[in-house]
Length: 333
Image (tube, rainbow, N blue to C red):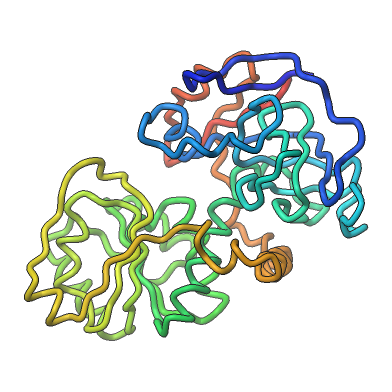
């Protein structure tokens, strides 16, 4: 079968690899319908500093972190409900030696990397979703446990931002979403998201500070970087924490005074899916998947689909920059 495999130089090679026949215990075979290319895929392939352990447990070095398809066979120990179902997949939720990645005609995954989709939805619409949805779920779980009751999302119109909005709304959690243009602000409001603030306006600081105090949003999901953390830190309530997840701002630094950190009792820390209790503890991961299975039909969870590419056109797919944050989607044919 056709598969895109990572070379030692982190290039991609289209190869013919043996298809899995009988799934290993606790694994499923999935006929892949589509795999959206997420930011993390590009970071891994193009950045020498990206974590190099992601392929240690992967047959034939087949790449692909996100995708969707239909389960055609299940191994011993897999709940019977998975057989024949459409699933969205986030490969990194469970890495095993039997894993065969998603940029292939047929994948082999541990069943705990798969979220069962409603039969009436198009699986392609969720071909890049589960990474964002699980990130949002794990973050909200973590900050709630740490005593926060409201959140700020700096990359408000990102796929993870939309997933955060959907989950926060279902939990009744106060939330503020930051965007960088009026068009993005209007787009989120049209999707039913209430508190959206444009960081480019003259009254941003006053508006944002007033909202954070009124809503008690003390946990910041920081996915932008650059100078934004330094801009918003003085505007946050006392006892706030900033959780760093992304770096859209590249290498641009930000600055904080020690007086501000002490006066606000401000905490700075990173957030990682893989270090969260949701992902590290198998029981909590299954609990998360069951919860998300019931709510995944929310339109805010859908992948923003852009142009479709075959495996042969992988270079064009990786270079694709779609409008409105749409993603390139890989299909075998």
